[in-house]
Image (cartoon, rainbow, N blue to C red; front, side):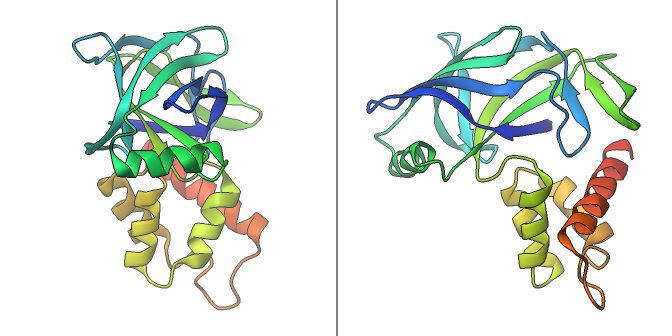
Length: 212
């Protein structure tokens, strides 16, 4: 399953756990150089009442609620209902409203022939035009260089780095590969790296992993 992470765009949040906003924004290139094209979600895995599941960090054993999902010119618009009777969901919702839990990540499969590479502003990005949505998740960070730089700097060893990548929404396979390929080079060599250079190198590493 592929993931694409973006900052939460909550339009309204109510005390009963309902919220509206966008779980994905079209034509927005993320750090992994992936971009969803308008209308990319050709199908959606839903509950019996036609809703998409909300999870915590893509853990389908830790569900948080469900949402009505529709696509417009801006992105994937969601009308969500969190299950506040579950303690971890209630805590997460308070963090969402406070702006601390500030990322949403969509989990999807790319359909056959549903992606291609296109050069944009001197970079090759993967354009995703046909995908099946499985769920969207609450995650602690949007996929941006600054958040990943701080993750790299905070990691004391390769296992710590891998665990923090998992916390950013990477799958176990992705986190293991990125950690094995990049931990020693990303700020953990003599002298370290400044944040701008570190962000660029992590961006390149993520892109190389995406193409592999």
